[in-house]
Amino acid sequence: MAPDRATAREYAYLPRIRRIGRVARTILNDGSRGRIAALFERCLYVETAPGALCCIGREAIGNGPLNALVDDWYGPRKADCRWDVGNDFSVDEGVLFFDRCPAFQLHGETVWRPRVPQGEWSPATLLNGLAILSPLAASRAPREGLGAAVNHVLPEKTASRNPVISSVMSVAWPSLSALADWLDGMFGTADGNREIPREAARLIGLGPGLTPSGDDFLGGMLIALTALGEEEARKVLAEWLMPAAAVRTGSISIAHIASACEGEGAEAIHTCLDVLLGGDEGRFGAALNGIDALGHSSGWDALAGMVFVLTLWLRSLGSADVVIAAKPPSRTVKIVMPSRTRDKPSRSSGTSWGDVPKSGEKRDAD
View 1 (cartoon, rainbow, N blue to C red):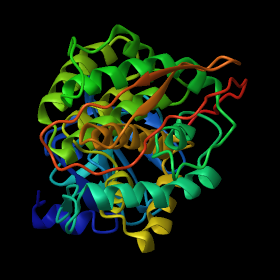
View 2: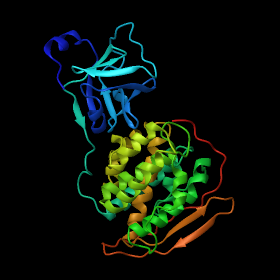
View 3: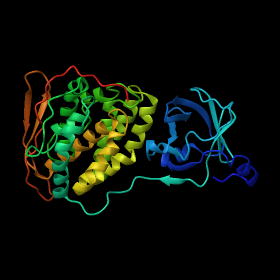
View 4: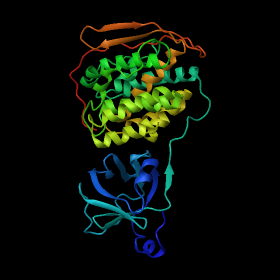
């Protein structure tokens, strides 16, 4: 959008939104009206209708489908311009106002979209990427949330076990086991009902924070399914998740889930997926720095969801058995699920889910 020349001169001092995600672009248009839904040190969320949210903040929050990044978050503003949850916002002539007080310019911005995986990749490069991730995840994944699941769904020969499992993980494990059965059906490696198992609903809204661990995990699953071209599985999961999320989690998380249903998430998540698929060892450090920066554990929760899908997808190509822990009591119960191949190139590698002990650890809010 472009303001007229008089408006551009009048508000030239305002900080400018430089990059904007696909969803945010549909929300921040001339004539938009709504309210501030949440306010934080680095960003704020505005909402134009139930579920229609975007996040405006400093460039450090990174690109994403919901994000609009400002070049100077603490730039000059009128002294009487107060930002509070519930304040009205509007967009007129390319200027964003809070309670009629001008805050940001909105014109000439670049629209960000996640890029498709770069370069050639194959099951072999993916397996190598998972092997590289294993020791890094063992030392870097947070104790809270579902990030530790990364090292319980990696190929057995490369997984570095992390004995510290959060209480969120203990609650989530039966859901993950049920979802693994479902994915086997969707990937064609097992017979049975292809409907989402009812146990999976326990993940929605599981954990504290604006985007709980279970929601981020499911979002990671959707992004990985999109990248793999598993359209049927993505569609089934998305069509089940959106109405279920509407009654089980918060509005900000629902907005992020809706983007994940379209295969879109934070740029850091897509970058890490690209690195995993290509098995590019030299890029892992920077990619995981981006994952670390996403919320308290949101990046690792989403990464765990991606690794969950990628590992089971490899098994569907004939990559050997996966051992699923049905639940994580003090005495671990295991279910051995023999692999069945489908008509795709086979790669040989053992794959295992490790024992999952109980823990009383709790996750802080994102």
